[in-house]
Image (cartoon, rainbow, N blue to C red; front, side, top):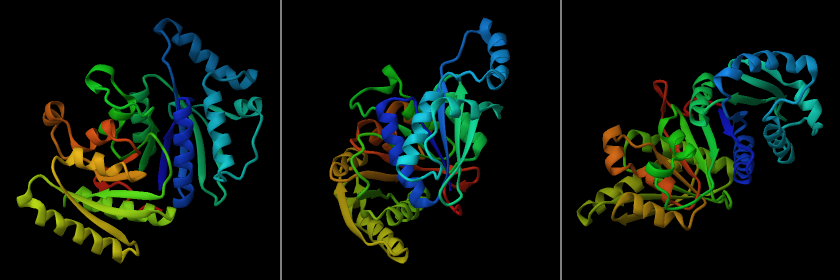
Length: 312
């Protein structure tokens, strides 16, 4: 598995790095940490290009490296990397510039995994999406302040836009408490079925309990929802994961958000809604991400295959 974790140096982002680091360690994953610094004005572009080429020669500190240094320290603290903490100036000098659009430092994990620290410049959403595409990642982890009730149509959100536009699965890490209980949401769709397998694998590796939830939009659909939870439970049982089954009646996003209050992580398949439908009505995953109170893992297709399938 290849995991991309994003940081802007804020406290919530550091919490996401810890959270993602524990997940990556449990899954024996290769990890990249990405920081995106603000773009510069066009008239300074030539000067910056020259300066970037000289940074290594002059041993100058690269702007934005401090966030990556802190991320590296967190990975070391949780035992993901085997390298001892380095002084900031040594880490700065170790970075290589212009590596596929980024400044990069390579580390080695305890089990031989590759750990990369990468620095890009530009708009956060665009750079994260470009990095995710370039690196062919299976999972992007991005932190969020966890503010509830804000409308993306008015304030915008890097986390929400990445979760909606990324070509791979995305975990929005907000209001992190623990990783002890997973809420797996299923609606019988193909992506929901893959979310069941992925969620079960991660929960098993992290020693978490699992609850399967299906929401019927009306009483007449309740039996169908119960059948979906039973089918999901059979799949999880084959994978060696025991789960509790729950069925609710109501609007899917509202019921999932309410049930998630008693869980640490929500796992669900990406919405199949069209862009127009999502604009006017929203999608269940986006609503759960925006208004829910815990981290959300959204599973989606990646380059003709299901994200995380067949990785190790």
